[in-house]
Length: 113
Length: 115
Image (cartoon, each protein chain N blue to C red):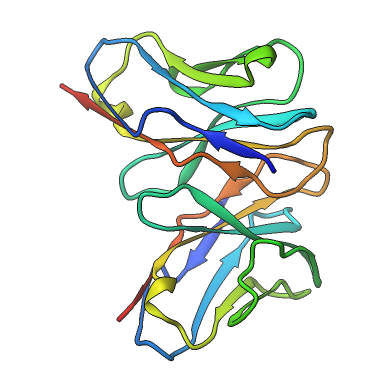
């Protein structure tokens, strides 16, 4: 029973480039959540999606960040024109419809040079 | 706004010592409460959760937590820690009543267990 998958595990980008982070939820899970963890901080909620719908994006920065969860394929967190402050660990979690408990992936560590 | 406070940033214990990690939250309504653990280099794993019912919750690996509503607390305990418990522990909360939505996390407590 595969857990939540994220790739890549490590991503290095130069300032101004784009970063694409992918998340495949657990089998049978239709809800995906993205969180960001800055050094010495807890996880901060970014966005909550269901298939083809953004349910809550209250934690997303207003510019440069976007997320999608298409009908087919993984959820994508996209960061355009990355800056050094975007360096962080990005975690994806998934849950079943109607379930509160979220299960986390291994994270993608983004480093912006 | 909801918030979660974990009082200890770093706890150092010897093996067989007892553990208690504090967690307080601020939210006036019904809550769902969670403890997650992150072992070095690994992803967050669910230790235990509380939705309703018995306020003393037992989780995996001998951990337990007690929900005290009057104190807005959900402290994590283990009677006797092992070296393998070295990890970072996160308390999290979301609005209860079956609603799905984002988790609010504390900043985490790093536990180092000396062999």
